[in-house]
Amino acid sequence: MASVKLTNVKKIYDSNDGSHSKDYVVAVQDFNLEIKDKEFVVFVGPSGCGKSTTLRMIAGLEEISDGTVEIDGLVVNDLQPKDRDIAMVFQNYALYPHMTVYDNIAFSLRLQKMPEDEVYERVTRAAEILGITDYLMRKPRALSGGQRQRVAIGRAMVRDSKVFLMDEPLSNLDAKLRNQMRAEIILLRQKLDTTFIYVTHDQTEAMTLGDRIVIMKDGFIQQVGTPSEVFDMPKNLFVAEFIGAPKMNIIKTRLQKEGEAYFVSPYGVRMPVDGEKGAALKGASAREQEILLGIRPEHISLFFEAEKGRIPCRLAVKEMMGSELHLHVTVEDGSRLIIRIPTLGLSEEEKKSLEQGAALYLGVESKAMHFFSEETEENILV
Image (cartoon, rainbow, N blue to C red):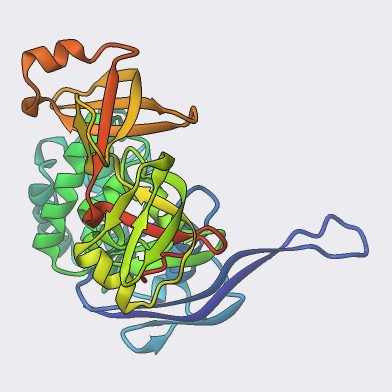
């Protein structure tokens, strides 16, 4: 087992087109992170943010332009991938089509000249853990996408490596298989009890799998934290909108202060900021300023009658999601908000009244509010 440490890691690509001047693309910039032994860390972000490039630098598949990568205290910048004691699972499975499942899993062990009886023991143990024992004599073309991914994971498992790297392993699977394989990876992690570094663009995967999440954008780390930390206290507007589905509602308004009390007025509706959030603003000596008020769809309360402190709106679109409804509503200035409400909490009469154009009213509690500076887009309480 091993820890992983990245210090001031940078990746620069030379995009010289043959002319005298050279252009450079910085894919990863000043990346600093310590991953503990047996920790499951997820790199997440949109396409092109540098997450896979960072993983490949750890694996030795990409040269490091600057900084250091350490595995178990040893700087591995100049070590070949085979000498780093890592195992990697790729997005496209990378199986040998002419080999059986057994031979695919055994391939790296045979390269090491391992005795065949030990190869057999490792392969059959991995196959049993992954539930692919019945497929060992099949070729990859006879397997489903989920089964092929299990084979790819099995091939990495048998190496008993210090660090397990996974580069978007579920992105080629359909939604049902992704859900199933997420559960399989959680169980696998419990059985292997090793250090995992996992790359994905899917924030649901990140939230369900990771002990900690590293959220990236344009080659920079935006925030590192547990799933609950990045969800409950996003460091900036990008993190706030990236984590959570549907994404956080953002409303332009002004944070105002009267004596020691704070309040906001989204769409002209005055709302006091009290409780823990009010105390936090006071503790941070927050000044009056233009802000972007963030409210998650599931934290907005729906009402059918007007009352002081509620935002009037009209229903534009209703999406039935099974156990919950996603309501897209239009407020007075024409902008849209999204609300998530459980269907179980609605009466049959209320469900029938949710027709396009219906007048509705929204309530927001202080504890559900997030405050971002309009100027910097940083969370003013972080």
